[in-house]
Length: 233
Image (cartoon, rainbow, N blue to C red; front, side, top):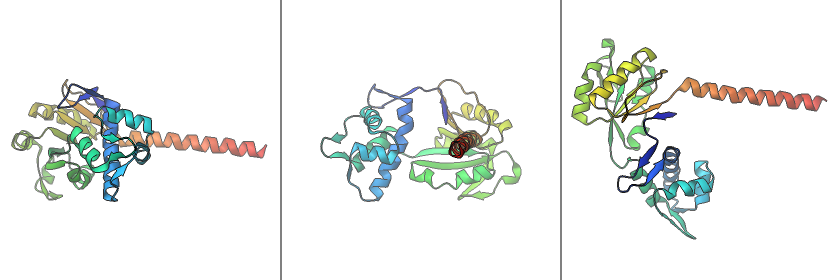
């Protein structure tokens, strides 16, 4: 995933800046801690948490140092407490209202994703420009006209918008979102978007991710083929 417009985060209660790379790993730590808590684990070492998150322990300790000192020497981290602190840091201890624009197959899947609610995001509206979809029920919400965007943003205090439209419509949707007051956009459309300073934009390009996997698969095949040749010799 790629991000734009912000290179560091600042804690709401301090002037300390957190590098963007660290911000990107905090949700991974939060997921690992949540799994530990669900399994009844009360404390964990940095090594245990690092292993669960798929990073090395030195990097994890460096990342957590930006948040403060939450570990106890010889004991480790209190799982529930650290989980709360990370959740507070990334803003998921409160509900964030989200609007999804583009209710095709991908939009349907996103609307039905149960993980949004459990992670502090509440989808408040599903919008589409196609009149044939208006009134359709998806995940308990009625699909409304895209022209309702400004009203939805104002009524629900929406600051996060999700674009799941075809590529050709994505920039216009982004422009309209920005004009309506949305300041963070998650783009699933296969298009490069431009947004003004002060607006965070993250892109999820599924085809690119698959191409990266295809590259690695191709490399594995080459290595395997070379190994076979060496054995034959």
